[in-house]
Length: 259
Length: 373
Image (cartoon, rainbow over all chains, first blue to last red; front, side):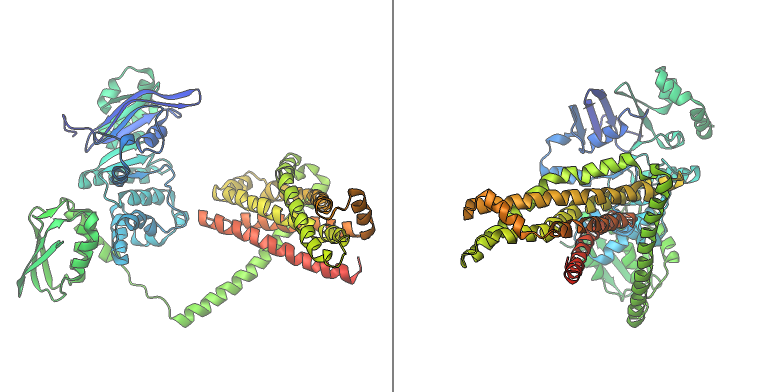
């Protein structure tokens, strides 16, 4: 459970994101506490991925601030920025594994970049990360194009974990997976969360994942974010949130987890 | 910095983990782990109490090294508040060792013979594939006789614009400059014999016979041959060509034939422009440098040309166009799996098409001399 009176891991204030005349975020606020799994949901085109890219510093906000561990990410010196980037792991929607490298080489890529260790150790670390995400050792020698969709998601997670981050960003980690693989991924996420004490920010449309893993959820509606626990959101009277959490799919997912 | 300290003797050992044990000290940890003697027997107690910020990677490396040291002879225990994920790592390690299988590479002779064989087979299949590719283009063209829509006029128009119209400035500029250079250098040499006027012959014949079309072909290969390969290659990576096939459409008809036809149409036109600009460049230099008035330049130009000079250059253009377009589209269709392949095959497309163009040009030269064209 998140502890109170602690600096939030991520704090977004008054974020405004514009694409031409279209305003995606209109004064969005968001806070993620340490050691929670925070889900981000919202309809298509409400800027979930834009929010993630803004937090990661891949996109400059049109207004507003993004703080990580209490420090504005846009005001950081180059050295601080680079150590901040190393402190979190990211998986992208389509995996974004480097296609010309094997899975093991993908995992070793950031390690090789930042730490001068021998090939043998690199191999051992790649093996460790594969084992953490539940991939067989021989998956390491394969190229991304030879992997199934579920394996790509796991391999991307293995790469995101390779620098031992305390904070993990996942963009639709279960999209495109069959329900069994998706459920396995949920289990893996919960397992890693408890074992490695990770803070996780996860964009997802998968209601099962949401109900099973997330301690709090932020819903993007009308360019702002409404964050609450799932129970709180179930009581929320906003029409979109009501439809989202009381649609036919949501009811089924809710029944599975609660009861 | 010492991160490891081994104490004890006989059957009773104690391993102190000191200082920073995060991933950042991985290099030291690795070295000092390797320095552990492999003669350890009995019990080994790992004391974590003075390890700061122990990371998963270093802990894993420690477990792996201890396993290498001989798990059978060594009873390892952990004390002093070991990291919470140690249990997880031990579980993973146990699973790992059950799954690990040793594979030895085949001997070197076998490998090299195998490589040679694979290369030969690859060349064979490649040759067949090229012929098949050509055949499929011809099939579409034959089909187009009864169904003109198969020629995809709108896409043809787009490619004519992109490979032709937009290439006019660069083709003109380069043809102009090269002929100025040829005329300038020619004038230096011929001037010594008082044969300035033959600069006109030099420029007109070299531009019309060779340089106009060859320069155009090289520019088009660099501009459009690479674009063809890259465009089709990215479509391959995105499974767009598979989507077309699945919708019952023929990627050769949709993607390849319009590009080939567009280049066949465009190349002769660009060659004519290059010829004209080349002659203009020669004329300008003759006027400025050799003080040959334009009227005299044109008269001399008429005299120096035989009726076939112009055509002997132009006739090569469609042939070069077919070579460039086919190599570009074929290499594009070959892209599979990775961004690196895309880059490699785009490069191959440009290099190969320029090579084939020059080879074909050489054959044309011999042929034209033989038939006195």
